[in-house]
Image 1 (cartoon, rainbow, N blue to C red):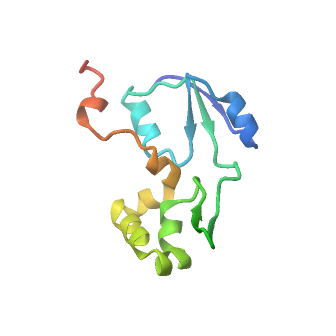
Image 2: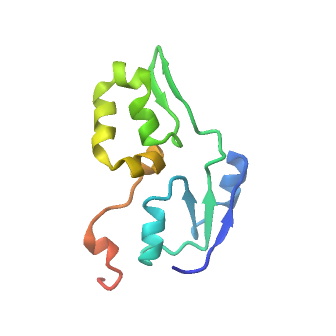
Length: 125
């Protein structure tokens, strides 16, 4: 893994100011760290967004709202999700190991890079 800078902004505006082409956001890190170890991704700066106000699971008249930083396990086990949206709960519980579900953010899961072996093989053009 290559050397990189690290920042932990306290606000969304700060995170956006730090963001650039050579940066990567870190929440759970379950995929980012793997890709960095394989040299598939080599950001110059990693921006830890875990302190940002992107949490929450709310049921309202317009449906379910889930913050991007909510952990998969927390969503799956949330009472409103389990009772009103059981397919979401079941899908999350079946989608990864307990260790990953406890670390992985839902936003990161939705934005996850491809799992294709060719993508992860840096020797393949």
